[in-house]
Length: 196
Image (cartoon, rainbow, N blue to C red; front, side, top):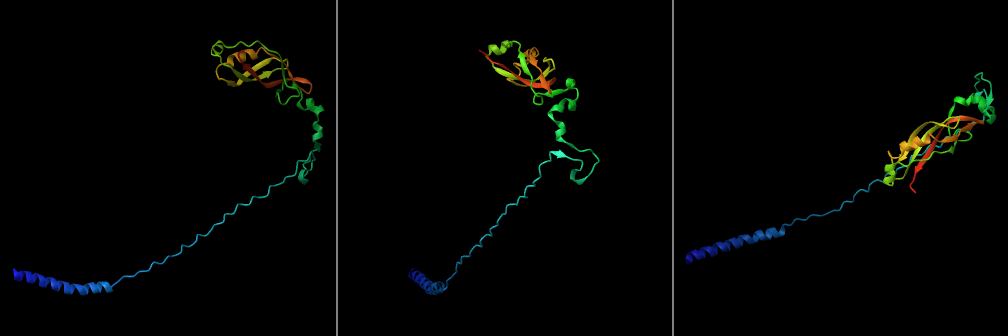
């Protein structure tokens, strides 16, 4: 046992002796590295240019009188001016206005209601206390009678249209006039349905 113990100590001694120079070698060896910071390249700034607008084209106002030599060309047409179309010549320009149908914005005086029929409030709408209106386009003849009618707008839809169409056919209008003569005219008429 003593011999075994001595042998262990001797082995430990040898291990320690040879181990020290290794530690010394490790101590002398060192790794060094350097960290260098690289500067990022600055992004190039892109300047966006707004597209230049073309200058607006200026066109001269139209001439009130036109001759036969438009832009220097001769078409062999007689000269005329807008003075030829004065207010006094409307009847001659349109000819017989008896069969002409116009709109209320084109006539000299629009149609005006003279008599209106009594409006019967629909029973279902009255029971439910519904109010609304109907806008119709009506054709008024030269005697002031409504010859055609069609619904343009109704609120609420499907409630008052039938009664409004039945009612408007009984109205009598002062007919529209153009150049002092009565003319057939399309006009818009609104009928409101209100309780109380």
